[in-house]
Each structure stands twice: as structure tokens, then as C-alpha cells.
Image 1 (cartoon, rainbow, N blue to C red):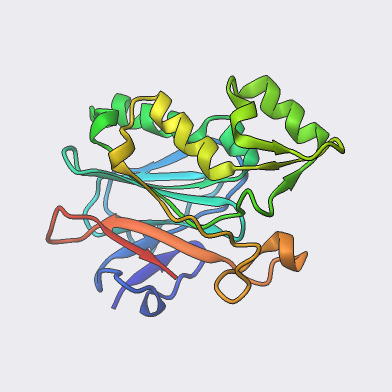
Image 2: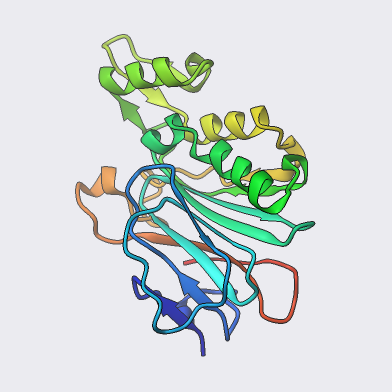
Length: 225
């Protein structure tokens, strides 16, 4: 049977989870800080604080993020044996959480961005993700090519393609197109498939995206629930 830490993820409901793995999820704060797990976990471990990227090279540890319109990103460097789970809303994306996590892979583990595989999961799509003037101003200030990822509506608002923004940032940091997969499903308009804060107006539930190195193998295990 698996174990979970911090937020109570029932591994029985997470398809693909290694039966003896620890699954770690922490408080998310719409920032860019990463928690690096570089040792084995135990039931006594507690992580006080907030992080939006979880990184580990430890076999038997799955790192997980929770989303309900924000973007879940899973990373794996098969050469260095490192994985990451990232939570990115518009604030985290504008603040470059994905490039910063890739830079952490390089500095801490010697990764080459060209060798890092990345999966961008379901999130609010450009079809539904409307943003207003203050968000557009933050994009203008923080993202050089921001106009490529918005669709202007002519009323001071626009629709934001958050997944494309994240992909463009990863490519600009050295990731390769063939190493990036994107699930092009919108959490807002696919009511039967996903929870959505925007659609429901409150948190009724979240999706879990997790990745880890299993205890006895160097191939990653990823899971969505």
C-alpha cells in the first residue's frame, strides 16, 4: 500500500501509482519557488510553507500538484533521473516558473534542457480563459512575446492561451518541441471531465497530477486522478 504526505492523496485512486511509493503534495501559493526532495521520506516528515514546483531524484517518491484551471506540468530528465511536478496559474507563468524549474534542473542535477521531457496537462483553455486589463498589463511587463498568447476582444479584455505561453517559455529555455506533449482540453468547458474554479465559482474539487521514480526502476511513473 502506498503512503501520502501533507494533503492526503489516496493512492488507491491514483492510477499508475507505485504501490510502495510516497506521494508528496504541499500548499500551493501561485509563486515560483521549488521544494527539492533529495532524501527518502518518512511518516514523520512535514513541510511547512508554500511551493508550486516539487522536484525529486529519489526513487519511491511521487511529487504531485492539484489544479482546477491552472496548468499542471510534469517534467522528467531520463538521463539524470530527476522529475518535477509544477502548478502554474497566470501569475506563476508570468513569473517564469517553468524556466526557473528547468534552470534548477541544470544547476542542481546537471540536466540539459534538451533532454528534459515535459507534459502540459488539462487547464483553462484559450476558448474560455478570459483575463482583464491588470492581467494583460502584467503579461506586457513580464512576457516579451505576450501578444502571441492572447486573443484580444476589443473591450479591454482578452483570452489567454496559458498552455502556449508555458510551452513557448520552455522552448526559449532550451527544451525541444518533440519532448513536449500538451493535453489540449479545457477544464472550463469540459464539465463532465474536470473540476473548474472558473466555471463553478468555488473549489468543489481538484485534479491531481503526479510523477515519480519507482522504487525499483529508473523509469518515471506518472498519474492523474
